[in-house]
Image (cartoon, rainbow, N blue to C red; front, side, top):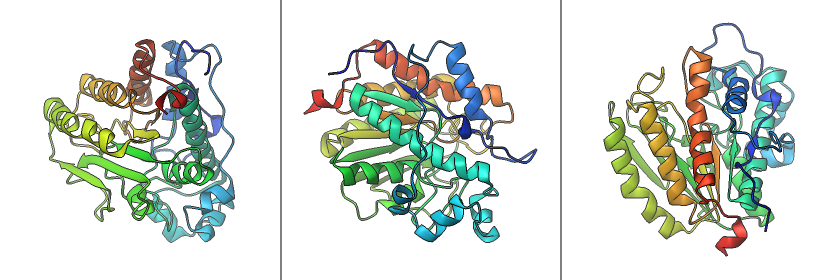
Length: 316
């Protein structure tokens, strides 16, 4: 068993913040700022931030079309595909996509070792088998869950996707893979128009608010954990359900987001290790957005201090 650490491991790579054209809708600089916020708030352990290796072509092409993967790695994605993604796939964006997948893989392995770990990126749930979409180049959870199943590191995974947008890419990737259960709770009138076949989808109306949102989550998650009995939980803690998020309309408050993250962790951790990824969040004020994404890490630190996280060996 590993020696207990004072805080859960946090994964970060400088490549997470790729150069982008001025005024682009995707808030790429939030990742670097999030790492700074975590340092300012004392949410990084004495071992520092863990730096991942970029995901390999072999890992990526086990989930995504190999032709598409080669195009991304060569920064030669056709313009019509870039339009679906919503950004030009430059060398920086390509490197970022590989690093983010590698970050979720490292965080997942750290979660198995320590019970809980978080990536400061990840949650690119719109990328599907054929390619990217909706600001997502590679589906980090899709690639990582597949790799860990294939290697025998895990036998059963649960994806808890609480981004405001439905996790369509993840759903299509695991449509015929019973060893990964996909659960997505999202806005019913939001992107994407064509939904993926999640194992469980919950559509929420605009303006749902904290109380109704948490009531729905509490009515669902415990039964799922008992039924699925996962070896690892992938948690997408998107902050775009926030009340003033540019792309979300579910009207959650900061307090509601913290209550959501704390509930997911305190409910899942007694059953399985959890790897947290930050998912979506959209605000013109990058500092304000990064502090909102830090809610996941604050909740993780609180769960850690309460002794809720246990290494995977304790769950056998």
